[in-house]
Amino acid sequence: MLLFVVTLSTISMKAQFFTGQKEMAAIAALTATGNTEQLKGGIQAGLDGGLTVNEVKEAMVQLYAYCGFPRSLNAINTLMKVLEERKEKGIADVQGKEASDIPGDGNKYQTGKQTLQQLTGREEQGPMTGANAFAPAIDTFLKEHLFADIFSRDVLNYVQREWVTIAALAALPGVEPQLQAHLNMGRHVGVADEQLSVLPDIIDKYIGRTQANVLRKNIQQPVLPVVQPDLLVRISEIEILLEYLEEYKHILQEESAQSIKIEPGVIAIFPMFQQAAPEQIRIVEIYAGQEAYHAHLETPHFKYYKAATTKMVVSLKLVDMKVVDKDAMGVIFSKIGHQPG
Image 1 (tube, rainbow, N blue to C red):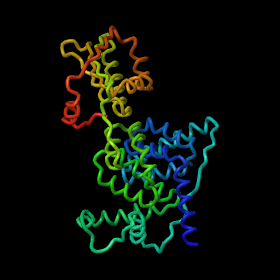
Image 2 (cartoon, rainbow, N blue to C red):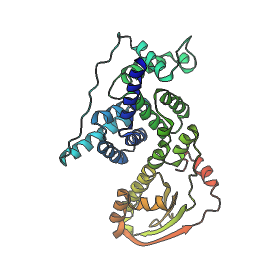
Image 3 (cartoon, rainbow, N blue to C red):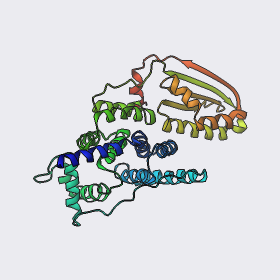
Image 4 (cartoon, one colour):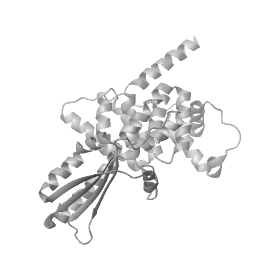
């Protein structure tokens, strides 16, 4: 009888996990990286795909523990704006389940310890080691707050919380040990390999090939090349009317920054101007492939740049280039602290 109850519980958990799982992964990844522009679309897709308002909100609250208060708060503010816009369009979103009171005897440290043991499948024994022993406060905060206060809330189950955490960590550089730990926890509580197998493509689409490859390596998938066979490298030679030069440079700077931040397929947009003739602008543009380039042309920030600067341009020449050594690109970008993708 107990086995039957557990089986029903597992089936219910997996069914809940499948509702909006891809959209939730995108929301988590975009929250973690602070990409609020694309997050708007991710939230729209998630709500349209069956996620409730409280599920999205709960994921964003949880993620402050992994990506910090500023990005969590920015994501929540983005969610509020999206909900207001949808309300004005007559869309009635499902609010969803409210969090129940957290059960327990009031000993949050023990509650968090028990939760962590359920996630890992290992009983914590003996004295603390490693970072927890070196800084015991972090052990207390992890157990009392993250694994007691947050993970005990029942708006999301353990499978969903681990899915959110894995997606966020997969999007962030420099956290591979934590990603591997949560992959193990996720598998232990019921995140199946077939579900994890779709996550690299989501990270690839919204964050970039380099980060997606970190995840692929950790789930034993073959990594994919960042540079595509149809890599596009171009030098744009532009002459600007002098009276518009400062305005043009400001618009160009905003457009190039947005392109690098938001578009995974934009490896570089690097504007320059000649010292002796500042109206002569040169832009080095590198796109992972033709698909990334054509996607760039359809973005709101590029369309705004194009519309706003047309009257400022005297001449425009696009010079397509061939790369001498593609393998050197990663080294070149790593020298200034930026990996392509």
